[in-house]
Image 1 (tube, one colour):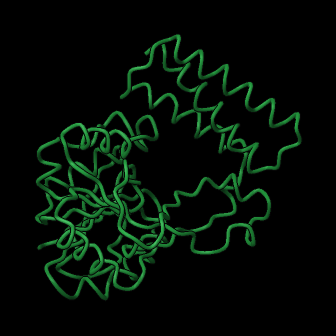
Image 2 (image 1 turned 180 degrees about the horizontal axis):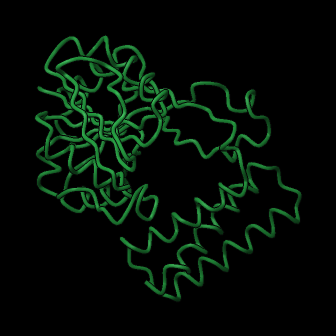
Length: 281
């Protein structure tokens, strides 16, 4: 099987170099290529790895899904791996991806394992909960899951060809989020299954500047609005979600709940408010 690794990136040259360096030992073997899919910058950055196995796409317009769709059209792999630029892969990552798809023919898509590169609480303290890291850790066994996470996911190219490209209304550079959620829903509706691959492990950067409550709430509210673009929710349903979320948060506050519980309820309410924002289209 040929594998194409697609890395969407925007203005993170140092991070992309670390990621490509972690992939480099495995790029030298097997039928593999890497596509750096850069968007939202006036000019392309210098290649972090000089090799015939690397392709570099550049799109001055912002839009993660737009540049990912270009990369999909350009990719030659039977397996398409998507990685965010702010992580590094564990040794043997690509071998684990290949083994997952070769062994588990029942799955058309893969959610890889995502762990923090450092202990968030040691680095950030109690505010670590507001980092909102995309952690995916379902244990040591392959299991079926409902969806993928954009930081570390992979698909059989034939499955993406059948269900179509990423929704370019969604994701960073557009409404901000939910592109992988919408794709997961579309795959399941088409009868495809998604599996969790514990050995396809990556480590996500821990950036203390992201441990910000205001940013955390803003992003959750954006997620709610994005959700309204690809899901159908009645006004009554959205109003009900807002009321329930507000009550849950007030109970947590009045009972002196800790920061993790408060943050979960703040996130729930912000998503509901974002869905309310999206009622008007």
